[in-house]
View 1 (tube, rainbow, N blue to C red):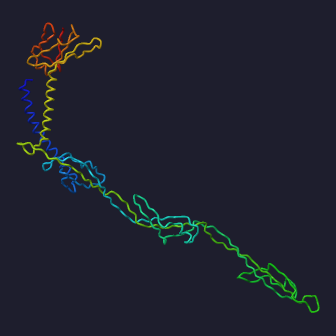
View 2 (view 1 turned 30 degrees about the horizontal axis):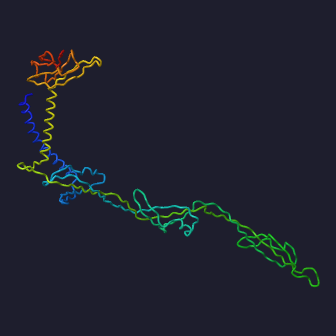
View 3 (view 1 turned 180 degrees about the vertical axis):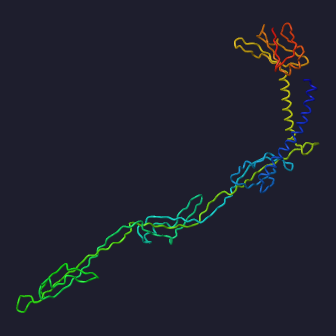
Length: 380
């Protein structure tokens, strides 16, 4: 490729690259800022100067599940300053939800008396469930005692009556066999005799005293509780604290954007430097590709390894194509294989390539070919 042709190709590309880069920088920043504002609108924005440095803070209030990294903006320009991210501060906004709660507790009771049962229940009870916590108070009026089971008990009731009788004879038949007492007919169960008075001037008793015992046992049954169980209610208000939202304060520090004299104020040094860097990179790529296309590779067959080794890569001019094989050492009386890349070979079709061998010079005329590369042999 001739220099004029190369210049004609590079100059329009550089011009387009400069114009496109400046526009791309501004457009990419604008799209980023517009996208952030559309998704997360700050609740407040404050611009202050700290130690001579403009500091811009944006405050957002988001739900806890939102990723705060989405708030961070790439460097952006505003009012002649270039702002860069410095830090992000976070503050959780807690909310407390309250609700009334009642818990019923059941314990074993020593008896059915309230005085014996109330000691089984503490005055307060801690509550923790589903994120709600608090203290519940005992409702004394809610205490109830009930039997856990019953058994039958039989009670005996003895009835005994003692009566005395004064009789003329100590004859049992003179003593009544039953008496009525406590609404019951009691049978005679015991009898004793004693002399009360004798006949005058005689040892013969004139009156006998009979002491009679009447007794009978009755039975009744009743149900007796085997145990007691007491229940009581605890009541109170519990609360659950959660993070309702998160306040993020994003801080950016600014620096004055330098403006080149004589240029549009909207075009900054940074934009020009960015475009220039891209242009230099493009030029280097073009030069590398140009040299690569115009490089011929020289191979020699390696008997030990049974492969062709590259022994030289040489730049070949299109106007005056030439190869220097005289500089190769240690390959005397060797056959070399020269491969030209397709683009170079097509431009050299019909041209004579001068080959320096260190002795008698050789020539090779490039012929028409089909394929990707062009190869020919040179024997020294």
